[in-house]
Image 1 (tube, rainbow, N blue to C red):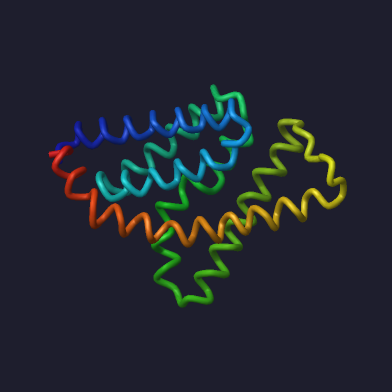
Image 2 (cartoon, helix red, strand yellow):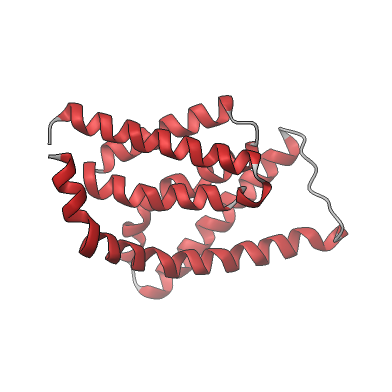
Length: 174
């Protein structure tokens, strides 16, 4: 595939991710789902044009998102975890199973913790609600459960993409 076509495809996928994160910014329900969908979109981009253009799309989406999107929580969740996780996930899978799972959860919890700390201390977004002192542990527990489902969904979507859609996408991109 020509370099110009790879750049164009990466740009289109970056634009799609920005649109999804904008929806996550304006619809509260999509605040955490939009970065996850963007991460899953990166599967197609990584398989189609490679890691180099995938990283470029991640950088572009991160910069545009932090500058122009109204909900910084959605954007920071993308920047600190879901945007690059698709790119580096296969490195974890090469490790022994126990280490792989441990390091994935460690990275996830550190990334989400840093993004939430930035939201509270830099952007001044309060992290309190009706649950009081239990809000942070409940948030962490629920988001870890969501990550478990994301991890279960990821290889299945990759398999479906490779078996059903990869040949079609490759044909379109020739």
